[in-house]
Image 1 (spheres, rainbow, N blue to C red):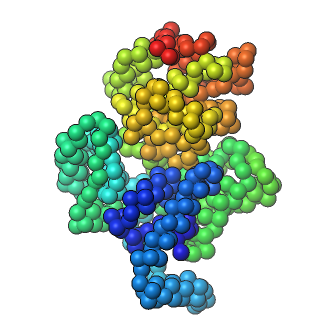
Image 2 (image 1 turned 90 degrees about the vertical axis):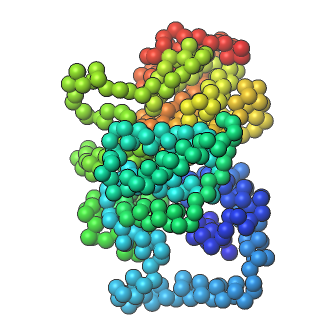
Image 3 (image 1 turned 120 degrees about the horizontal axis):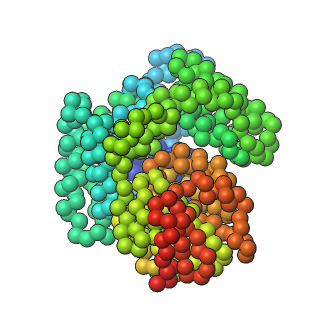
Length: 496
């Protein structure tokens, strides 16, 4: 039986093309809400998503059952039972390295064969991104952004002609440009299909490097630091590390074992002291050591290869700064008039009293960004996904393949160029939480919406305003005024 626990293992034996249309939609939906299996947080935190996924899995199990011969099913079930319940127990007791190696999963075998690195090379990241597009539907804008990312990596010499994968990178660039010519309109979408031979070749290259498990755990731990987190979040990370240790996937031979061991101790103490929730505080000495590992592997670029900012803690000559080429987004029309032309990764806030038009303004802005500048996630925590939000999307005519809507804040935001948080109040985010989001996803622009009291105040107002580039106030119904750093004094009519 396929469940959320074994879904991504079992789906490897299924062919998407053989599924009915309704199951194909469910397949895509699960990939989207779990970030291709990276996290099931959305499933556990949203009743509507859980209900949809459960229904999909139920129908998928029915389909698999009705399309599999009985004898084959019996044979497979027996084999599976034998492997998962008996042999692993025996293997733990007899612990011979040869028997352990012979029963490794394909994923673990690939990890063992790969070169363990702190940072996957930019070339392999791009190749993996392209290979994973196979059998997926992409919009014209998504292909355009991929081309920009690839060409920028070449221009900035993060990928060179002498690269071992230079030939593959050029092939991918040609394929993407060819795809762009097939779109009939800006709103068109195309299903990407790669030949088995080509896809296999790309995935073989990608498999040559693997990120150290210890580095993954260290990054997850740093992301919890300083936050007010529920007990189970710390417990989940502790259990993930413990499972890796108990299954010999993480051993004392790892170069960062001592750091992971310290993380385990801190998490265990946190869980014991905070039965419900608490703030995970890490000593400055420990944090500096961990950040040294993360920054040493250029992890500011790990969230995306399109990074064009100057890293933190940098000393530069003023003449060098003058010659820097910061990429502007190229705003036009009323948004240029209201905001100016910000750079990638800008931070904005929209605030005002209830029922003045803040969400209408935000939805309109989200639509503009999706049509012209990238992939957008609109987190509608204030209203949820309901008929009110539907009406706003219709009124502003902003529905677009690159505009996604959610009623919760996902853990992974790497796929989005712009994220709207409506509202920060309902999401329960503090200034330090927003700062952490910007730090974790430096290539993503965040637009934060705030609900104020009837007097126009909200908790932490000054601190929130100090941390953003763009400040938009809605002082009266239908009117927006901007007084950030790019174009102070800009105004627009929200409903005009």
